[in-house]
Image (cartoon, helix red, strand yellow):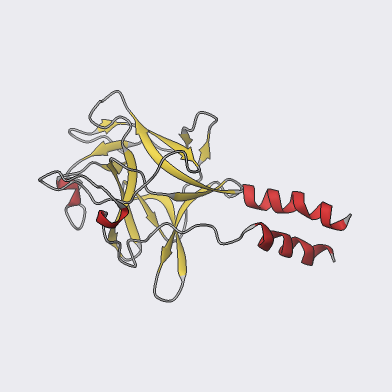
Length: 202
């Protein structure tokens, strides 16, 4: 009987964290339905930009936090969805609380625009749309949406090159350095959660 009581606890623990990908909706056909990925722009700082595919992220519904597990040489470090200097990014420290509505729309304080030439450190925005929280000349108002689970295949990609190239496999996507990060799966499985719960009960 005790074993049966553990299973609901494990289910609740697992349900609080989900794999998601982000995409945008806009009246502007140039950016509508594009996916959201991130690219290294500083020490453990990834700016968010638009491309064909969305990058897999994690969403903690209890903490209302979107994050990516950044794989470094010594440990995995979460970098969180937030805005700093007017630019949406994944970075260490505080996060912007996010709720995801039934239709997938992200609800949080702040507006979102897609813009080029935002003066980012590596000038990727000269050729790709990046996400900012304020209107600028040529910026496009957008809304962010989330897709849960494995509804669509996702790939990490780099901002568009001057000559557009297609991504045909995961081997041809951007080579992510330790600070650019690769999305990590949640490491606790059902067995792990059952073991944790069992320790609390017995």
